[in-house]
Image (cartoon, rainbow, N blue to C red):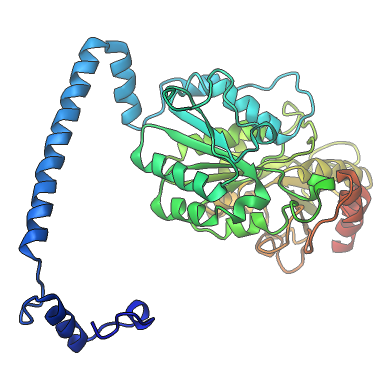
Length: 417
């Protein structure tokens, strides 16, 4: 083995001579290009027979169980088929008579509304359960001898959590979700990437999604992380703006059975959006939609001269700025864009309907880095973003000092005109 004990054994192709020398050292015939020792072949042949027997025994056990427990047997068969139970969507909360909360709290409401209807849903957190709102209240914790429960305490080990969820998703029978702060997505990025590469249904619940963490400071404030996740092919990153979009985000993730989904959820309260007056949140499934149309001073719908595009907690800011701009005679449309990946998959006509090419005055608003937004605002548009690290102060102070105010949005918008 000429390269044994050197770095070249890892990095370099061995070459024909090195292969021959390796075979000589092992006592294998040099004249056979492909050779499997009899002992190894016998071992693997036996493994095939053992595996076939184990599979046969398992299938017989399942049949006996289904016969003895018809109802549970049918449920087990349904779960193993990786199909969602019939009528599960009826369990989604309608969110009527809302109180203002963070999207992480709304997410917790959705989880507990659908948990009983979707028994294969299994959740956990990286030691941040109360903060991530990931606890299934109708179940206890998974422990030794208590495997019927549905809450996993992963501990402060995000990469291991992501890897374990991927393993469960690959096996099937469960839909795993796990939560942590969005800034800690760095620790589990290899697992997120592998989920996307493997086309599996793993749901990553990231909360504390921006500089809105306030006093936790720049180490915990997510700035570049949502852009980093958006860079992963086949991963849908959804940043909902209110309770209704949060509900639809969960619906989209549950239907997305052949790819992973990541949520970006706020720590701070978000604005209440009147869905009877403005667009239905089902527009989330197309990635972006016209939430509120441009209006004249008299309040009549009209063609927009300006488009504000926002995600998450910044949608509420855009909605207030829109009212001021409309009242001042600048017809302004607000587009909620919770998921770039879903929007990019739409046809050209839909994209044109949402972002008309003739309306070049576009301002994107997101409390994260500006990277990637320019493809939506164009050369004549602008981005209100956070292209630096956060600061340690109350959330409202940080947002104000970083320019996320109605006055600054209106000022930037007017400059575009």
